[in-house]
Length: 152
Image (tube, rainbow, N blue to C red):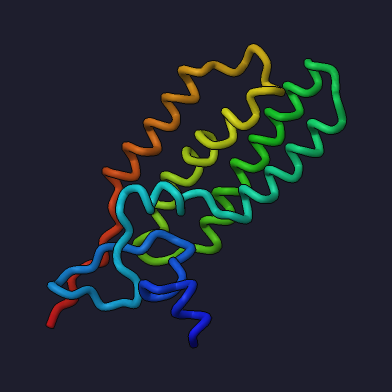
């Protein structure tokens, strides 16, 4: 218990998925609803980030010719974009599912596009990367999962 209180002093570890807002004065649940910044962080599953980073690094180590590297990383991004949608669809539920299905794929692209810039060559445009990141932030502010009010 001491270990828990030292490392998780405010109510324990954070939820892996966005925590919805709940009606009422005091929300029923162990986690407080997420702020827009917290939602941005949670929209790309850690498993997706880890796997993409490992495979992307392996692709870089192959030292492919620029043309092959460019199309290889595009294929990788497409594969992981689809994987993100499938993973989120299977792992989430309730009111947060729709929010994740809308924002997570865009958030993945906003993260993976600049990370992959070294292999994308002339296909990488800084304005596109900035635009994608702005869209994710805007979506995280606008799309706020809310649990419906319960009838008494």
